[in-house]
Structure formats: structure tokens, C-alpha cells
Image (cartoon, rainbow, N blue to C red; front, side, top):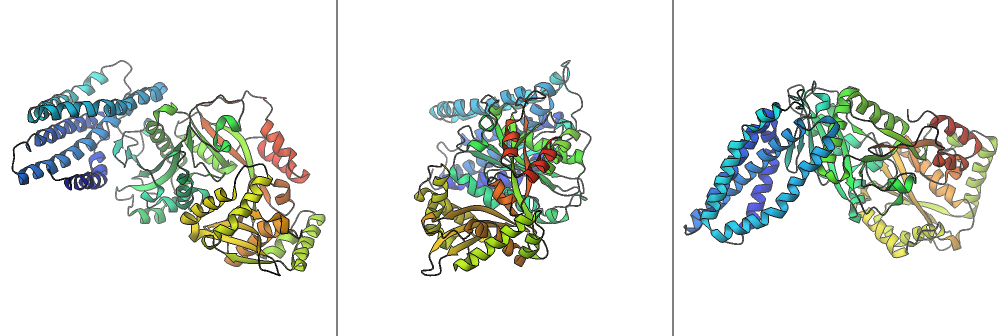
Length: 584
């Protein structure tokens, strides 16, 4: 058998799996159709094994043809087995113990990975007779698939209300079964991939949300290779108002075709190196537990990716299906997940949707806050004129005047051509605030950002009047109608003390937003007092979770107290009021 045939077979398997996964799974909507899919899978795999018995002693053309056909049969068997297996696993897992049942079901893949090589080695040692014996085993398995459903239905505890509902497809490779919380709704299908780019509608779903939910940032954050990622998109056949997203996906809804409803990224990161994305480091009262992180693991601002139009119940069904698919992907999490850094509105939307779909309980805890500025029509001058206190207005004008008199100037650029200059300046800031990050590490970080985010990058360079040297910078990214300030860096030894931080991190980005027709300037977390005194509005951020213990009622919230202590008095009172009742 020529070696060149191997990559061709891999290509055939991949192309067929991508092209046929939805058609093969479409008819698998209830247990009996799941059993039929398993029966077809056994017969297809039997054909595959029988064809592999042909090559021994056959002419080269015949042998190659048999191997190619066996690859086709193997792919069909995989697709039918995945659709049928997931259908039955979800349909007959008791709701109160679904996580346990699905975790055990997921161990089948591990058992297959361990036993498969040994079985194939034994078959190869025997030769054609071994492949024919394996074919007989597959035929027997196919015949046994038929009686499975009647046996399960006769169990006293067998669930009865799972004949339609949410159908999930793991497009990498498998079709998943009805989600019981929405049995009265049209099917919702979940497609999964290892990259957001695999979903052409991802960025349209992410457009109304944070920059940190978009494909470019998520792809960049995955380049540290610390976590495994799963990108999931839920589709529904129900007609909604999401015409733009549907057009991108090439589907409608009114004609029975699927259209995107929601999206979600899940990360499995037992060795997470960012303390702010480790639940027990953020909330010291929690014991260590392996959990799925939803919504991204860098950026400190997440949000639900949802198309407009669906009702809360349908949106909840979609989010529930996405979360269940993520849980099935990593059974070791035992159904535990957390979704950090949601605004109050977004946290409320997710909780309401999941509650409407009967998917819970979902706990909410205050995790932090961030700052933003709504860009006024009059730009920077109007912003300063609207500051809440006369002293703040006076200070802002003094800062602008001091910067002008210093002779320093701001130059706008993009990231890639300045990476080597900016890395050491960023390292200076990191080291000043207690982080052991070298200039080389920060340069490498910025270079990776440039590789993925160059097109949306905006860099504000602060340069000296005498030698035009860069002594400070601010890196921001455009997303939709907003600008997200990401980092600043300084050459502290050369700063003249002309309010460089205020100019780079607030005033100049605000000018840019006004000139570019952007609506919002996102300033991120930390440095609350400096940002608030220059007109930023404070916004509480929340973490949702399932499967993690919630604090007892009346327990003092140390995180909230620490945030209140870091705020000016006016903003502290607003923040106290905004966080008393939990997320909106």
C-alpha cells in the first residue's frame, strides 16, 4: 500500500465528516431514531472491516479501492454512532444525575482510546480472518441496538418527555441529543470547533458584545497554550429577527433551516496561570475544584453571544444546550462551571434565560468592576464640561494645559511596527506594580497580539519634542462602535510630569473616539480613582457559576468592601447602591 495514500484517506475522512455530520444527525431526534442510527453505525463499521480484509493478496488497484471505500464506511459509522450514542445518553440520563451519567458515558471514549490500538494490533496480526471476525462483532452490535430502547423504556425511572427538543451537534465530529429542558420547542443544534474562525457567524454574534468576545482576541488568548478551548454555536429552526446573522450563516429559519441563536466559548484550564481566572483565588472561601471557564479567559470582560429575537425561554434553551455540550466535552468538570466578568445586565440576561429554560441553579457573585466613558457629541470638551465636580473640571483643564506646554506630542499608529519599542515600556509598568515581567516577555506578548489583532489596533505614542523619542504609549483596540484601552507603558526616567497617563489613557483615546464616530471608550479594570476623577463611569462585574458553593446569606463581601474603599466618595455611593441587589 503506497504511503501517499495515508494523507489522502485523512482528507477523505475530514471532508466527509464536515459535509455529512448535519445530514446524518438531522433525523436523530428521539430514542428510537437514535437506536436506528446505532444499528446503521454497526453495519457501516462491519462493511469497513470486511473491506479491509480484501487487500491481502489483491491487485494493487483493487486493494487501494477497497481501502478508500472502507474509509468512507468508517466515516459513516462514526457519524451515525455519535448521533445515536449522544441521543440515548441524554434521553435516558435522569435529570438530577445527568452530570454523573454523562461523565460515565464520556469514559467510553477513553476506554476506546486505550483498547482500540490493542484490538487493531491483534486483528492485523491475524490478517484477513481478523478483519472478518471484527466485522461479525460489528454486525452483532448492530443487531443488539434494536432491543435497547424497549429495555430502557421498561425501566420504572425511564424519562418519558424526551421525544423532541434540543439536538446538539458537535461538528467536529458528532451529533448530540435532545436537551430535555425545552422539549416543547423546535430543535436547537450545537456545533463545536476548536477555533472561533470555524464558525463564520461568530463575529456577528459577538458584534454587540465586548471586544474580548470577538474571534481575533479569543484566538490570541489561546496562543499561550495553557488551556483547551471549545467554541460552540447553537442553531434553531425557529424564525427570529436575526436577519444579519442568518444571512452570514446562509440560513433562514422560516423554511425549516437552522440559523444561529447563541454562541459560547468554554475553556478547560486546570493549570490556569492567571489568578483572576481561578475561582478559588478570586473567592478565597471556595475550595479548589476543576471547573469549566465560560466566556473567555483573558480580557476581564465577557458577555453572552445571542442573536436578537428569541424569547428568554428559547435563548435559555440555547444557552443551556451550549453549557451541556461544554460539560459533555469535559466530563472531569462534573458539570461545574463559572462565567466571570459579566456586566450586571449581561449576568441578569443569562440568569433569566437559564431560569426560563429550567436550567439551574445559577449563583452570582460580585467579582470586580470596570470603567467606561460614553462619548458625548461634543467630544473631549463636552466631556470635561460635564464632569460632576468643579474641581474635577479644573484639574482636567490643567492636565491638558500642562501637556501642551511640555512640548510632548501624540502620534497615532498601529501595533506591528512599534512592538520592539513598546515592549520595554510595558515591562516598566508591570515591574512598577509588582509583576516579574521582563522586556523580552512583554515584547513577545505584544508581537503575538500584533499577529492576531493588528487590523483593529490603535496605538497612541507620546514623543519628546527634542529627539522624537517614544516615552509612553497606550494600546487600544477597536470593536464595533467602541474602543477598548488595553495597556499603557512608560519610560519613567524621561517623563516630565505633564499628566502623561491622563493624556494617553483617557483624553487622546476620547478624542479619537469622537473623530472616528465611536460611541464608547472602555477603560477596563483597576486605577479606579484616576479614571473616575476624569469622568469614567463605574460598572460592577459579576461571576455566574453552577456547581460551586455560594456564600451563606449575610456573609460579609470582602471583595465589595475592597472595591468601595478604592473609589472616590461619589462613585462609592453609586457602586454601593448598584451592587446591593445583585446583577440586574
